[in-house]
Amino acid sequence: LQLIESGGEWVQAGGSRRVSCSVTGRTNSSYAMGWFRQAPGQEREFIGAITWQKGATYYANSNSIKGRFTLSRDGAKNMAYLQLANLDPGDTAVYYCAHSSGPVAGARPEHYDAWGQGAQVTVSS
Image 1 (cartoon, rainbow, N blue to C red):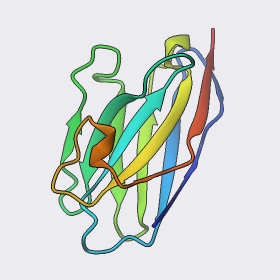
Image 2: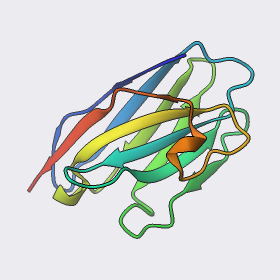
Image 3: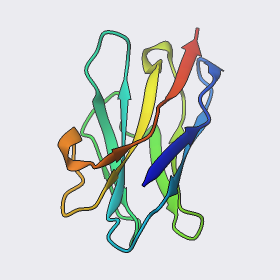
Image 4: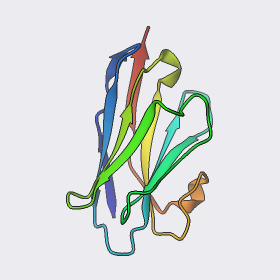
């Protein structure tokens, strides 16, 4: 199982960016994809998760994330996406996708069995 991210970039405050995650080796046992971010000097922060089969989403109950970040997936292409909107410098971080074989895809990193290399998103004011 291999996860490769793309889409990290410099973005101006107020802008948007989509981070993509290509999944190679996904099987029928693949349950969901999670997304996290890690800012410099901070712990890894859960953003949300999306199931492969139904596209059900679960977002972190965080005011800094709610309403601005959107998860989606394309099972036929084995791709997962994180759409970032209305970005501000506080969103500067490395964004990670992670694979879960189930039965849980929650906020804890141990729910996930494979990780992408991370995509750096830098938001300038």
